[in-house]
Amino acid sequence: MPTLDAPEERLRKFKYRGKDASARRQQRIAVSLELRKAKKDEQALKRRNITDVSLDPSDQQTKGVSLTLQEIISGVNASDPELCFQATQAARKMLSREKNPPLKLIVDAGLIPRLVELLKSSLHPRLQFEAAWALTNIASGASELTRAVVVGGAIQPLVELLSSPHMTVCEQAVWALGNIAGDGPEFRDNVIASDAIPHLLTLVSSSIPVPFLRNIAWTLSNLCRNKNPYPSNHAVKQMLPALFYLLGHPDREVLSDTCWALSYLTDGCDVRIGQVVDTGVLPRLVELMSSSELNVLTPSLRTVGNIVTGTDHQTQLALDAGILGVLPQLLTHPRPSIQKEAAWALSNVAAGPRQHIQQLIACGALPPLVDVLKNGEFKVQKEAVWTVANFTTGGSVDQLIQLVQAGVLEPLINLLTIPDNKMVIIILDILFFILQAAEKISQKENMCLLIEGLGGLDRIEALQLHENHQVALTALNIIERHFSEEEETVRALRARDQDHRFLKDLTNTYHCCTTPKPGPRP
Image 1: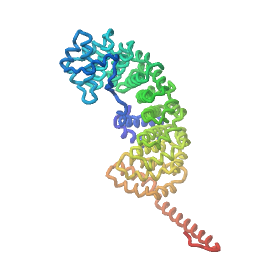
Image 2 (image 1 turned 90 degrees about the vertical axis):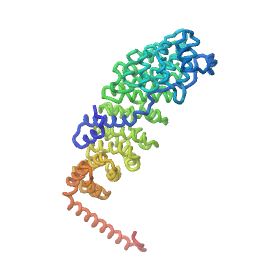
Image 3 (image 1 turned 60 degrees about the horizontal axis):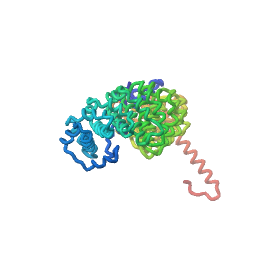
C-alpha cells in the first residue's frame, strides 16, 4: 500500500528511467490516494430527515401540540400508546429542526433505549415510524451520538423493519441504517453483520417509488464506503448485482449514489477493481461520463479513474469501453475540478504500456493537454504535468517526439518558475528524458536549441542556484549532461542558423531586385 506521503513517493519513482509497468501502477495508486484525500467530502456521509411527513393524515391533529422535555420523557415512557405516540412525535419534531436540533439533549435524557423498544411495536406502525425517524436524526449527528444509537441496540430492530408491510416505516429504517453505516467502518460492519444487505436488496425493484429507491442507493453507497478496513468480499459480492441494476436507472440521484458506491469499491487493490469491472459496468460508466449533471459526471469519472489505476488489462478494458473518446473533451470542461479528474485519469493511462500511450495520442488528447498546461488552473496543470511525466517515462522515442511536436515544451518551461519544488523537479526530469530521446535519434543539438530558444536554458541554469538542494542538483545534472559539453556545438549551430538566415535574406533580395517594381523588403 502507498504511504500517506504520496507526492514524495510518486516523485521518487519518476527519477528512474527504467521503471516497469508494476512500478507505474503503484505510482497511479499513489496519485489516486492523493486525489481521494482531497475529494473525500463530496458525498454526504449522513442525512437528517427534516421533512414533515406522516404515515397517517389524522396525525395532523397533533401538529400544534408542543411538549416540554420533561413531558416528552414521561410520555415516551407511558404505557398508553396514544400518549406515547404524541410524545415520540414531539421528540422527533424537536430533532427535525432545521437549525440546532437538540440531538445531545435527547440522548442525555436517556430516551434511546425506549425509542429502540418502540421500533418493535408492530401493532402500532405510526409509533414505529416516529421512533425510527427520531433515531435516524440522532444517528445523523456526531459519532458519539451515532454510537449511542448503536449501543442502545437499534441496528437489529431497524433491520427487521426493512420487512415491514408499511412502506414509510420501511423507508425510514433504510434511512436510519444509512446514517449508522455512514459513520465509519465499525458501524458499517455492524449493519452488514446484522444481515441488512439481503433485506435491502429485496426492496430494489422497478415498482418502488423513486424517493425510496434514492434512500436505498444512498444506504448501499455507505455500506460500500470506507476502506480501513474495506467491506467484506461477501458483502461486496452481494451488493454488486443491485448496483449494476441501479446504474441503469434514469433518476440522477439514484445514479449519483450508485456511482459513488462503485467509486468506493474501486478505490483499492486490483482484485477489488476486478470485482467491479467483471460486472460489465464500464460501458455504462463511460456513457455517464458525458452526463450534463455534475453529480453524475463526478462520481462516474472518479470510478473510471480508479479503474485505470488497476492492471494494464483493466485499463485496456476501460480503453475498449471508450474512455478516450470522453476524457479529452473533459479537459475543456468549464469546471476545473472535472478538468483535474480527467487529467488524473489520463495520467493513469499514460502510466501504462506504450500501446496505451499510442491510443492516448491517437484520440487527440495531446492538444487539449497542452492547452491545460498553458492556461489551466494550477491544480489542473499539476495533474497535466503528471500525465506528461508518465508519458515521457514509459513512451518510445517516437512518442516523445510527437509529444514535443504537440507543443509541450513551452508551457513546461514556463512552469519552471512556479513555487512548487516537487513540480519543478518533475518538469526537469521530463526535459531530461526528452533530451535523452532526442540524443538517440541524433537530434539532441536541435532539441537543445529549441529549449534554449524557449528560454529553457536560462531557467535551468538559474535553478542551479535554487535554495532547494534537489532542484539545484537536478538542474545541474541537465546542464552537465546535455548542455555544457555541447556549448561549442550549440554556438556553431547558432552561427550556421545565422548564415542560413543571411542566405535567405540574400535570396529574397535577389528576387525583389528582379521584379518590375521592387518594393521595400519586410
